[in-house]
Length: 64
Image (cartoon, rainbow, N blue to C red):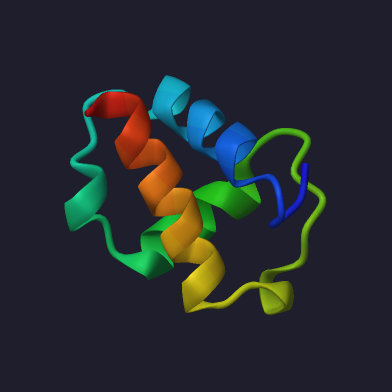
């Protein structure tokens, strides 16, 4: 899994943090959680706000 896999990342994060208010989540926290995911192979420097927003919106779609 890498930064391009927004849907897979969102599903994994939702499993680990099911009660999290995803829209209130700071991007710094989101980035750290993604980097901590088992099987995630992306590098911290390869992401940006747009990518994190895509992950956030994919996660939001799961819970809304």
